[in-house]
Amino acid sequence: MIFVASAADAPSTPGAYALALRLGAPLDVRIEKNSATLAAGDYLYCGSARGSGGLRARLARHMRKDKRAHWHVDQLTLAGEIVGAFILEGGDECALNAALSDLPIPVAGFGSSDCRRCAAHLRFWPEGAALPSRWENARKAARCT
Ligand SMILES: [Zn+2]
Image (cartoon, rainbow, N blue to C red; front, side, top):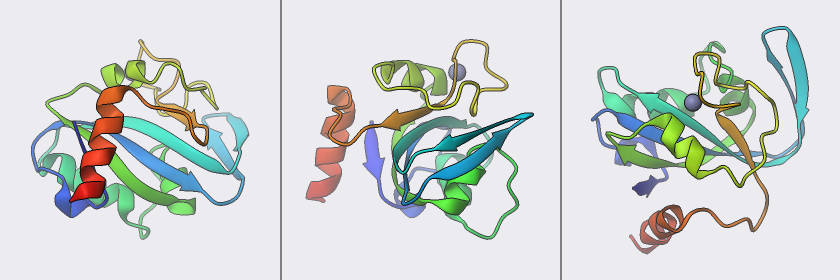
């Protein structure tokens, strides 16, 4: 696993990622017929990139502000700030999400409409909450480069 701050640093191979997002203010989000308010703070959103351009192309889209909201997570990427992304080449989004099972789920069903395994693909990341050691090591390695 690696941590990247920009899409340009991500590989163009397929794999899974967890976007680290920061909301500076509370945000009202809609998923299907439900709405909820996300508190200000940090979030992790797990997704996968299987198309052409792989992880780099997918992260570049997430980081762009000039787009129409299509996926649930676009509401966060348009309103908030993307701090970076944890990347696992060849990885699986649901496995990444399962590794974060200690973190709370802010909105049931968020980002996981197509998934039968996960209650949501979005996690709230409380300030100071530790991530699994593999994730923390990736963050530390990114800070040194
Ligand atoms: Zn899933």
